[in-house]
Length: 87
Image (cartoon, rainbow, N blue to C red; front, side):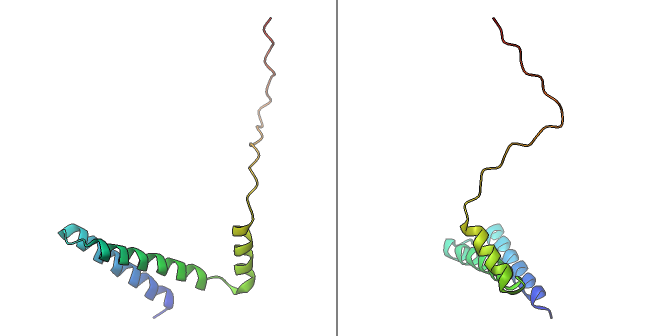
């Protein structure tokens, strides 16, 4: 079985467990927190292991460290007319 399928299966089982616990009313906050942590860890592991080589990882880390410049407002293709000054 492929590693991606195993990660998906683990996430699906954790989600089903969480759903069953909430639906039956046996939702212990510590257990729900552990399931939340496990799902987040699976997502992070999936993201990191799917990066192809260190160049993508380095580019991702560099993009996360650089502050983003404010976006310029989009230019309209419709010509605008300056409003007349009221006197």
